[in-house]
Image (tube, rainbow, N blue to C red; front, side, top):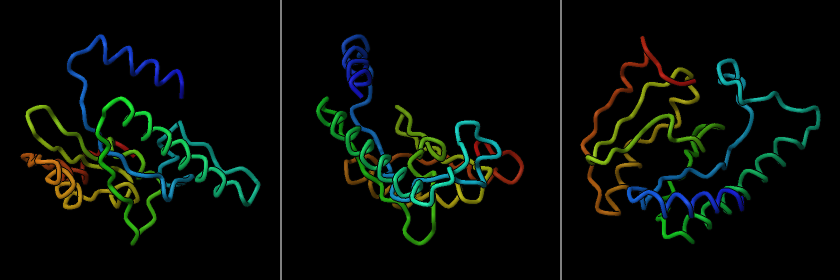
Amino acid sequence: MEQLEEKLCMLKQSCGSLTDTVVMVAPAQFGFNPETAQTNTFQMGPAGECDMPARLREAACSEFQRMVEILKSHQIRVLLLPSREDVVTPDAVFPNNWFSHHREDILVPYPMLAPSRRAERQPDRLLTLLKSVSCSPQVIDLAPREQGNPLRS
């Protein structure tokens, strides 16, 4: 984390156009997702220990909190979008896969390959969160295209 903090300082000094706001989703249900592991080389199967998923989730939550603190210490506003509670979304901590927000104040929701990843999308809650900081983007919704051309697992 210290290396990340140093890199963030260097980037802020060298680039004048870094964002001052990020949207993050806490890893409340973080874990191995067999549905997305087939197309995601970064995922590894669960170890044999039965308490491993709980320890992994605990470590992810701890790292997440530390990242929020680091970003805030660098005057970056962190908007927290809660995970859905009505469905299990182990990959929800990666919202950059289902949407992007552009400088021109455009929000783009993307198609997703895996049904469990599609369940992460919360466009209404995201728009409400953005409006809470006086951002009302135009939405260009690409999600309906997922039947023939999903972008991510």
